[in-house]
Amino acid sequence: MKSILTFKKISLWFAIGLLSSWLFSCQPAPSSTSSSQELEFWTMQLQPQFNDYFARLNTNFETANQAVKVRWVDVPWSAMESKILTSMSAQTAPDVVNLNPNFASQLATRNAWLSLNEVVSLEVKQAYLPKIWEASTIEVCQDTTCNLSTFGIPWYLTTRVTIYNQELLKEANLTQPPATYAELAEVAKQIKAKTGKYAFFVTFVPGDSSEVLESFVQMGVELVDEEGKAAFNNSAGVEAFRYWVDLYKQGLLPPEVLTQGHRHAIELYQAGETALLSSGAEFLETIANNAPTVAAVSAAAPQITGETGKKNVAVMNLVVPRNTDKPEEAVEFALYVTNTENQLAFAKEANVLPSTVEAVEKYIQELEQQQTTTPVEQARKVSAVQLEDAEVLIPAMKDLNKLQKAIYENLQAAMLGEKTVEQAVADAAEEWNQQQI
Image 1 (spheres, rainbow, N blue to C red):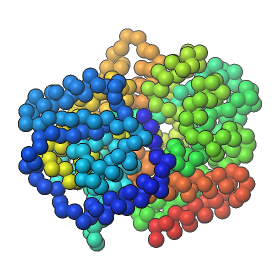
Image 2 (cartoon, rainbow, N blue to C red; image 1 turned 135 degrees about the vertical axis):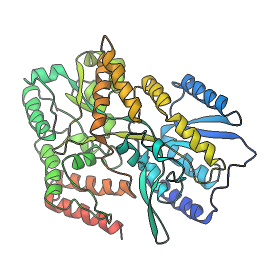
Image 3 (tube, one colour; image 1 turned 180 degrees about the vertical axis):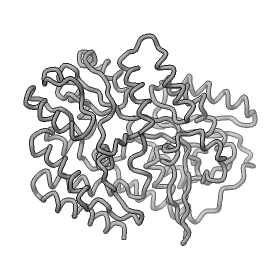
């Protein structure tokens, strides 16, 4: 389940500005003595597929906490950002909400969420994968004081795998998919020369997938320094820029990479026009439904990485609005939803990965004990095993969308020959730094 950036950027950030003004002017959250015992819980696009799961989940919580009733509200993915901003401005926000760290962090810097530093014990914190827990931690500054604040509890995860067309690789005299970006460049040449098709598609559209930005980190590029200034205007950054620019200029990337988003990568792979697709393991089921011929020759391998060996993980978390009138119940419910037992059950139903240490161990053990292995199960195992090396490659930070925009737009300029690689890197860094003043 890939994180989707809304295309209404201007109105969204204007709304965040209004929300920020309200948040800093309001009083701290009252204690949980409200006459209303209803706990409102928002998720993203999980109905109707998981209605039975959440019915059981919520009923079990209510049975153990008879003074509380859970009201589950499922919000379409594309509407969540605007709806949560509107509800918080109107002081009608839910008590627990499912977001991703990238968006949640933008509001965390504005003190929107309940800080979990003092309400979640070290013992409970250590139950979660440490790198995943860190994904929901950010520096929050108020007046002249800045502190690290944990604003969310990890829920479910996905790591990309490389889904590959075995027949196309065979036509190109290749026996296995590439494991690194260096290998990918060579494989792209061979596939194009032998089959006339492209090895893969990756988007450079600023408001779409962050895969290229993440590849920089995998290649060893530091994006920003401790002060938030650009750290990629150096030889490592130039090398990463040049890698993608050279692939494009050599005709090894479809020209639509400049205009089409990640969805086009899916369309090309399902049409048999590309040999590799970077996606979640669960997507093999979609391919089986949409393109059974391609699915029949598809398999999964670990995601492609750089010399660092780092692998990406996408995180969904649960956050508690700071102004909930039931903070204790909200935190308790969030920890209940994300405990090992419930995470493991949801991971099995949704073909995603859990985020507690124990749940991941059990998940892998159960996959290994299965007598037969379907392509989807094999991909799920690849995905789960990757968690040992996986991390959120781009940590929660303010104005991440602007950093991606500066880099992607200058990459495009270099690809089109409007700038040299060195000038594109320098301009991207300057653009980002100017925005941080």
